Length: 152
Image 1 (cartoon, one colour):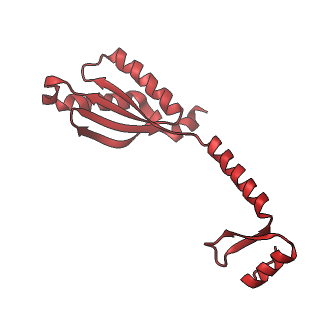
Image 2 (image 1 turned 90 degrees about the horizontal axis):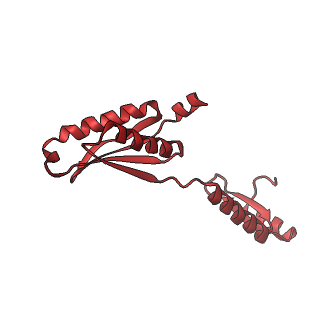
Image 3 (image 1 turned 60 degrees about the horizontal axis):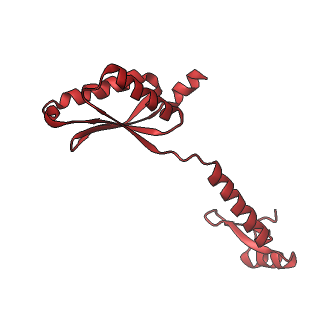
């Protein structure tokens, strides 16, 4: 810690130590700089970024489709798969596919979505309201962090 100094003083301190002056936080007031060996500093920073990238979990949006005439058992099986996705931390899009004359009875899809969300219980939070696009009704759900805390 050399304290607050002018740019010229900082450059002179770096030259005296035969090291480099590296600006660490330019947004701070006053800007923060370090006197370090640039090659070593850059190598360590690159390694840390690679480690962070490796440890980061790649979350995806998974999709489960089902028809309006799905049986309760088949719906249960699909919802078990949804629960697996949610425990892994993924978001899931539930899509009800309308076929032929099903479009005349749009309300069936909305009740089916409500039933699916109710069967998932506290584990799921609805991220987006049901959206009707083309011949599909979709909602996006995500896992409930407070439900995980209760299970543990």
